[in-house]
Image 1 (cartoon, rainbow, N blue to C red):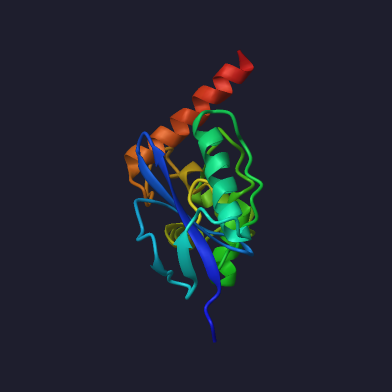
Image 2 (image 1 turned 90 degrees about the horizontal axis):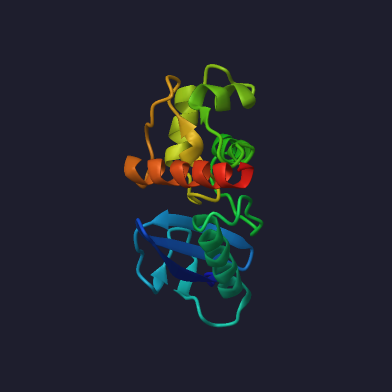
Length: 175
């Protein structure tokens, strides 16, 4: 089997680089930090630096543009196609997470109740730790039941920064 090709790109932010990976089917990964420019992605996808005009590279560019607009407080919703690859429960959690509105937060328990699994808050947390598409699938909007900031792959400083960015943009749009 010949691996499918995709594209990888980087977006510099005030809190460090984001890596964006896409296939022709959709966005596969948005994560803090850097990944090698060429090589095999964990899914077996052969990735190359974004720049060519192939569909995967265009998706990487679209995601970077949308993430840049989000970080500038100018975008609240993302519309790039996603490829969510995980267990059925993980995918359900990630899809439900997209219902958490910009500038809002839910607790792990609230997300579990939204899924119809009121006792699955810990399982929800485990699924969020595996979220491959950070920011766009907004796991930074999930907080502890007591309102505390807990758990985020990019670190709590980045989580706080993203939540503050959203709150500030909301306040500006209301004022």
